[in-house]
Length: 110
Length: 118
Image (cartoon, rainbow over all chains, first blue to last red; front, top):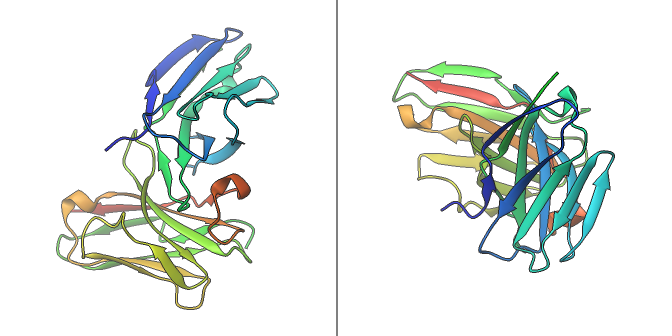
């Protein structure tokens, strides 16, 4: 059972454009994390959101946790080729088990 | 060590053989996790430990899979009588905390062990 649905699965944009990817679930999570994974590497944590409605910014990346704590979005402003990667969302329940989505593959073309 | 270290990085084995994958977590990290990741998919939870105690093994696919962490540091994931469907990237991760909600802990992933069963 895929608890977290990420969309779009694949997105290709030109350098300088903006993009938004989504992570949706029917389950409520106590927290949600976003990771970025590059080929041949392990996922690297970008941010953790905890409170419903919370917005966090990391340079050109803006993360939002839905009010009901079931969904999240990641917005990238003025994308750069270095933003290319697989973006994974992961929801945490109280038992410390992280459930991952399949990821949003983002390609930024120079 | 500086990061989570896994070995071997690549393993090719014949169907029916047993394999052992090793994980050396970041020094001092209490929690250790094993995930499996297929190409193009997010990591799938297998099991996790706090210190030497296995807290949750509900993600292990069947009884051919087992994991241990006898001294609360290095962990071994063992797959007995391997099958082709076991081929995947196996990732280990560790965090500083004692299994609290991950909002209080950053999880660091290793580079993984690629397993191919032929």
